Length: 82
Image (cartoon, rainbow, N blue to C red):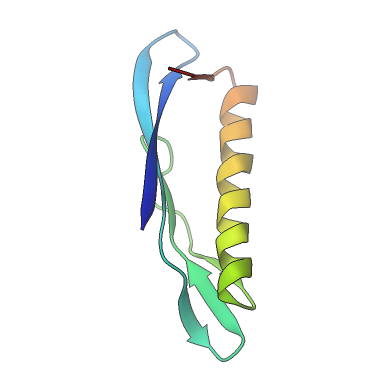
């Protein structure tokens, strides 16, 4: 698993840390792989992201994280660069 902390400011300017986690790809079937995805502090439980191979599953997981963080920003949250 890989993880990275992200410092944030919520819509009410409360400061906290989210932790993005993407699990190692694992094979489900011959042409189906999956990765776990979590954004601790925002989305604790998400369905595993699937792809036809390990790279696609990993790329789909990263794309989901980006999309969810963009939604967080659109709803008034801010990502803080330290």
